[in-house]
Length: 167
Image 1 (cartoon, rainbow, N blue to C red):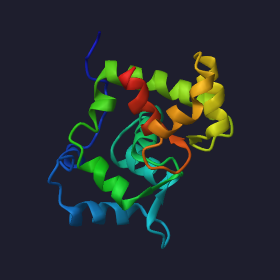
Image 2 (image 1 turned 90 degrees about the vertical axis):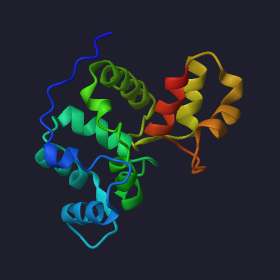
Image 3 (image 1 turned 135 degrees about the horizontal axis):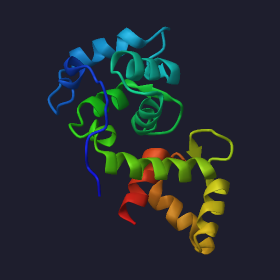
Image 4 (image 1 turned 180 degrees about the horizontal axis):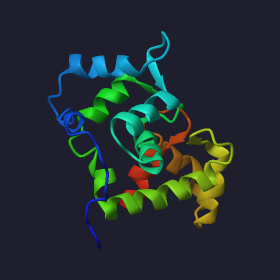
């Protein structure tokens, strides 16, 4: 498999934030910079702006990162999700490594095919269609319980990706 880097133009100064011991104060300052309202979350347009305008990602790369950052699939990025992403030293490998990026794109296409209501999550009914399509219609609740790490009753993309990566 080809593992060359893609041609991302991510600002080297921002790349330096991606480390396990990244300062929470610095990351909080960056988070606050992109909030356009008084909420404690970044909405999708705000996080996409950060990824595209300041980090130099393409629309496609930014959308991919957004799906990985929004751990619960609720359409918003809370500070905890933001901090975890920056403290993950491998976070940018999902974009920089062509092979990894390609596998994630396949997973995104599959996820979106079953996220019929475009909610950013796969609910029980959508999941039942997915499980049925791969030949396991009788194990919906068992598999859903395994995949739904945060117990919110739906499968987010990161939960889905973790599962398909093990297959």
